[in-house]
Length: 310
Image (cartoon, rainbow, N blue to C red; front, side, top):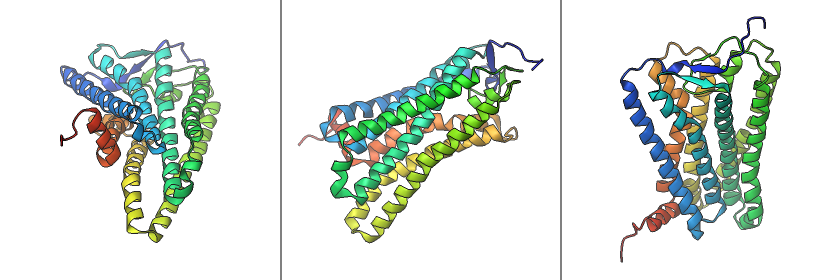
């Protein structure tokens, strides 16, 4: 504690000195951000405009796309700024704001994916009761619960981090993440560690395990059902499963890099793995759902005026 200093900024050391390559990276990041905004905003608009898509599955998808835009906004503008900047210092206030946005986005994504699996479970296992169970009130409640829970959890997380005193200010990251910030603390981090462990256990229990249960039950029903039911389950569940695995693997990379030494990995690969969960799902999901789901594809064609003339 005697060696702690009142730092006003953190330094993001992962940018390093990339010379003129910074303009190339800036162009790539700008294009990716533009594609993310365009693709997600298009599907959000289509789902809102088209009354045929005002069904639970598509409304949950809309919430997923909104969350992806929210998370991308927490990363890309700062990433673009620091790529061109000669200094890579980030103020404590903005660092904590970025942590709040990115972590609340991640927790909301976990919740959204769990809610979507529950929706598929009810649709396939209880088709006759589906409309009675998934009422507009339930849909709004589940979406709001996903957002408000993540906002509250991260508010507590930030309030605990604000109490810390730091012995250093060098973060080997492209953006602020809570685990790296806490590792720099000289003061007691027991409360932060307990809270982090509690959130991890509770969120896994409330999202991952119900998702596994939902798909086990769906599989059991499909094994006993007709070919038509199996095809319906395959068409609606495949995009969700792929989206879920894509996000989980991305988040797993972040956890492993935070807990284990990854200095032996090439810097570029390490950087890509660390931003994977913030870049790949927001790009991948809109295209996958837009192509794989027939009603969304037709609605997009209709809104964009691409329907063939008869």
